[in-house]
Length: 170
Image (cartoon, rainbow, N blue to C red; front, side, top):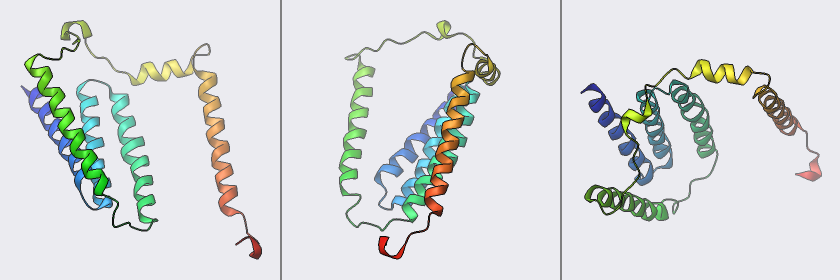
């Protein structure tokens, strides 16, 4: 019973905030509605037992990417015609998704569903992912190489941001 209630709770949060993000006229409010959508998805990950994905969703998407989007919105000039096409596309997406769900419900479209008994019991994923990253024959070298590439990008962006321009370049 609690799983059903929590599923519908997270579904309502996710779908409601996604619709607000698509249909709201103010893009900053849409970005904050996107936060609710991302947190609702993290709730689904927690329900599925994927604790690593849930924390990744919160830290990277809801924390980092959303802050980057909000900073980008705050630093750009507003456009009065920015949301007109988005409403049409959002309406098409909502009607299309509803039609697919309706067709699946009445049996016109059949999807290959996995039985719950085939899935097995969810286990903790953080320990297994951490150990897999640190195995010498698996992901250790690509993981360290990705950190070096990200560090080089960070140093390059700091160099570009701190570079002084001459008067004639401006």
